[in-house]
Image (cartoon, rainbow, N blue to C red; front, side, top):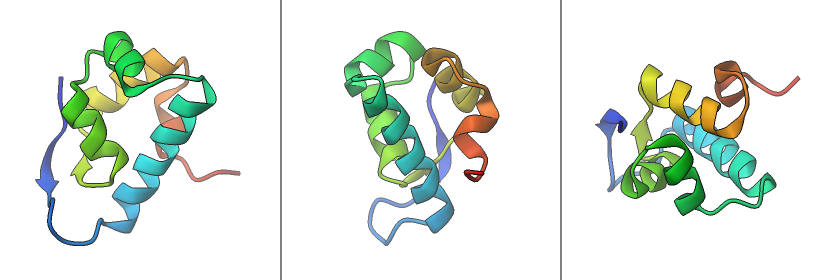
Length: 83
């Protein structure tokens, strides 16, 4: 599984995509995981994980679900604003 367009590796990241990437990275790091650990758990490629964390790609719904399952959280935890 991988994320799909929109993607822009040259301009500034979209604030919404950057917020998703920051949350994904924070959750991964809170578990003491490397991207390799998340790749092994989710099946999302290293490159896609990097682009997602950098806010350079929008995740698809299947990608969000795979990441949430790997991290042991509900999919909404990756996209909801903190309470």
